[in-house]
Length: 263
Image 1 (cartoon, helix red, strand yellow):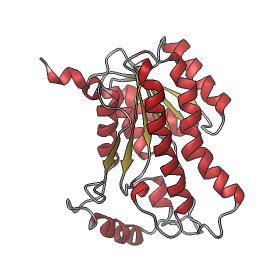
Image 2 (spheres, rainbow, N blue to C red; image 1 turned 90 degrees about the vertical axis):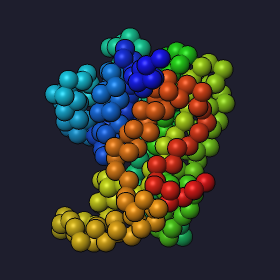
Image 3 (tube, one colour; image 1 turned 45 degrees about the vertical axis):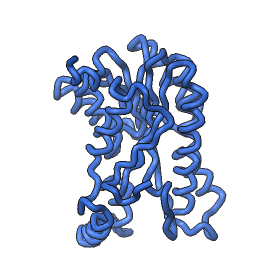
Image 4 (cartoon, rainbow, N blue to C red; image 1 turned 120 degrees about the horizontal axis):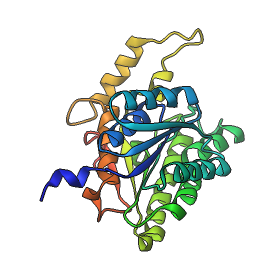
């Protein structure tokens, strides 16, 4: 048996939300590299188009679409367009996410609703839209965070949204299992991305590289491997969960964090 075929996605179609960002763009590129036709979906269409262009330039097949993952109708329209354009949908990577750094005592109703909508409700709405058109053998992969295993001051609302996403992942795995659809998640550790870099940009829009490097060094020290996560590390985990290599894996969270939380 050629084991490499278990990681191929030839003939399959995938949607990656938040596809214009770090983990999303890496995931889209890796899925396309494995043979999937990929729809790169992002609120920022320019970023999505840039990623799709890079994929096609590397010999893959990709299309860009704008989507607001907090809008159930927009996600249904994205799925409908994908099914009409490509004739099927086999992989959904619910990846879009944001972080709002506010202590829970100070977080406003608007902030809390926003982070829940982008990080948690989008998993619900995206899966509700995709599941009806997915066939047995399809896969849904949600992006969570290592913060499901701990919390820090100022990230309580983010942790709550990601922990709720874990509950949705496991429950959808139970509900969709009889249809032959697997539902899993990746929980990346601290990764260089727009979210983590944004914390080190001042009011003038200047990026503080030294401040960023200091935090990266501290986060690397929490892993037995002594390094931080790269977006490609999470993307490879997404490929495993999307492919037949994980055909009997569902309701599972792959912690891509270098062992910083061993749960």
